[in-house]
Length: 384
Image (cartoon, rainbow, N blue to C red; front, side, top):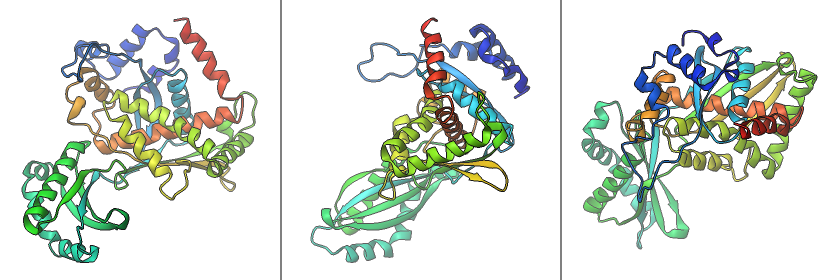
């Protein structure tokens, strides 16, 4: 990105002025600009009768691991993009986000029927042939291996209530979302164990709870930078920590806390052509992975540093190749604005967007209230 000052007062400009800035900043062609409003898509859902559009905006001010980003977001809800950008600005003036990504490992599940056999007997059988099974599966996917991926591991667990052994298959899917690939490998594995050991399988499909595909973001904010509309920054920081603790002990509050995070994450996923339903399912499942639904982010005060420390960790399965990322014209332009990110980059951007969104929501809640800014923008949009 050339100059973040180009985005100062961006919201005050006309749409044509905004587009001109974006075009210059990212060296976009006239075709790229046309793509931002295209209804000419080269794919179709079943029984297609038209194209449904949603607004595409941008959130500037993101500084992630020392790199500046302008984040495209698709949402119908007023104030989401403004809040996300504002949260990112507060974090950026405090050094920005620190983010990481664990890697693109998807897991598939194959339900093996025990049918009178003991779990331990079948588990021992499969464990003793695990390396051969992995070798056979990788032999079917030379293209995946060429791109740096492969089947990594097989593990097993028992569900007595349905008399089944479950095989978990770990797969490095590289830059793809990997759903179709994972499902295919699960079916191939089921065929292999039927052929070799006469074992029958029932369900063969990926799990969207991708706990080996985690993105994480952290930030540290000085109390003084949280001052807002006459509200003391120290008191705002304390209020945010208390709001987080409220969510820790109350599922009703935790649900809304997490929805606010996903306001931003979903908007980025839509803009980049990714599967919002998969990520929503994963994140809300992860929020209750210990048996109690909890807030996905955490906020705590560091009294020594006089800072508010934020943290967010999400299971997140994204793709930058395949699916509509390769066919939707607008998505192609959006990815250019994001500097053609890898899956690792995009996952880290997504978790930072969620943390920025969460910060803005909590800051508003503990100061003037959530409605004041939201309704001002909502009423403004109704006049457009």
